Length: 310
Length: 264
Image (spheres, rainbow over the protein chains, first blue to last red):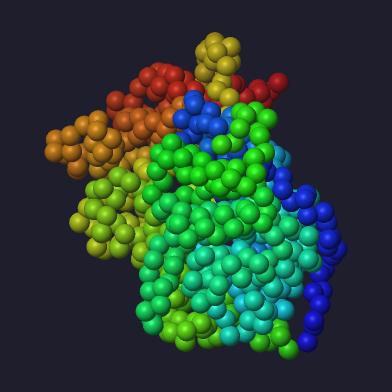
């Protein structure tokens, strides 16, 4: 039984890199950039810390997506968030996909690149879902190998997002925070702390969300995600929360976020909304609530171009 | 030892995602001992519904024509039999029109496959590479080619495509944009279209079968003279000058020039 991670390479950053270097986005609220808001964003230049886009949506040859992202990028910092790299996959990473990511990085120079602790492809197929992995040594070695490969190929530190899950594996030998800690230690990557995912997963697996957060290396958090969830029930009638990104952030998640900010201070915080996308004004309003939470703790970092975040 | 602990876990998990009749893969558990199948259903639903949603984004008029319930049922059959091969979903659904053409429950709406193809061409045009239109100088020079005019080589923007249908799919599509009335359309009337992007806007330009055949011939590498002849064969009312003017107006040509003389 192997008890230490045999990383194939030391990684671009190695272990123990300065934790502050993970915070490359402005320490205030941002929102997802939606095509239906492209024109309004350019016309009104809302006061928001940054925009985040899903990398795969921009892996197209030309047209309006690149036209607008290029123009919006001139005015705002960008977070590039991957949803298709399948870092937890049993198979090798897709080199062509890494090359496409490298092209997007060169073109848009995002302040941050993040991906998920999950798998989404197997064999020839892509499933368009972020699927769970067992937390065992074998998976840990594979995930670390893949993250080393990503960071070397992209020549930068990435952030890894904690997942929302519905199932656990009998073969798991570590808790999720323990697994994440190991990955961060061995690869030098940062943490994208999705507070909604913490609430969803902890509810789904009968765990204490505050204890989960306490168990994480918070100094490695480079970005926070907030989103809404939907409610269902499992076969025993226990609550089963679904990470739907289709509704406003719930009060329990705001409460958990507030406690995270109390520990961390202001940090780039994305309001995620991928379904039932409301008006730009409504998204900005919700993002403003995150700035209020942050400013209640300490003044958020001011953005050079547009002034105050809140 | 640990490597052999879970051979092919993701293979079994993947198969279960797409096949609702399969049991949950072994090794799953829930904290409260409840049946993991109910929890697996969340992932099964995420996969299926998000991919159906992706198709619904590409085929809004096809969905409107047959109704959401029928469309989603049809799309679920397609998703299970042809899941995406790429994490880039913009062009997932390129094979959906061919699937519709062979999907027996859809045969009651015979124009559906061609209508879906028109929607595929629109998405392709939307995301196609940007290229500079041919310059006015190059056009003037080409127009002075005299007896060699037929030898002119044309290149089209990557966004340009042509569709020939036995059905009135252009009118049906337009009716769903509020441009026409569905009740007055004779669906069995053959229609053709050129689809392109002019600036940021994707346009569906109704045209003769000859104009569509001309565009296809140019894309196959035929010179102006041969492509024009193919247009004239496809429809007696093919108007070369009007077709060229249409393409130039929308910046759809990227090159128009004589090939070098072979005897030079």
